[in-house]
Length: 182
Image (tube, rainbow, N blue to C red):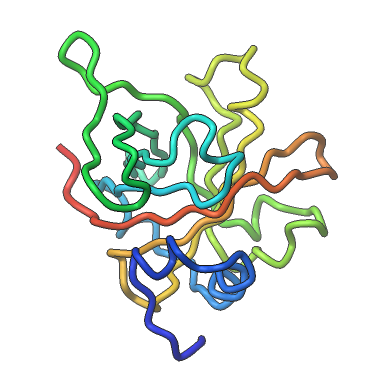
């Protein structure tokens, strides 16, 4: 592992090359230690920022199965600083993008993303994502801990899986400010 100690702010401002190096040096988080928490997220690159620069990512577990969802956040124009206020509709947080959590090594056989086999994979090709929403179901996030053992900071790289052998890079993202999910 590299000697640099990362923070949410330094990752949010890092170059793509630095983010790639940090991700390749990252260790896979234990999904049991992610479950029950929500993180504030920041999309680093323009394609990931189309739905919003800021978001919240929730990790859950049921019967030793790990999954999660994203919450939509009001965009305040402050990039990776400011507030993460969840959008609410009918007194409920607006949720979009459900995923299952897997070991990347057990689920990936594509050479294009094989360098991330040591990480966790967040696979969006599940229900309750609408079957007709091919873009949502194509998302594959590879996540790791840039500071070994530090579950307060997670680094990810999002791809769109177009076919079983063709992935398009979407964005790096940073997860921080972890808190218990209510």
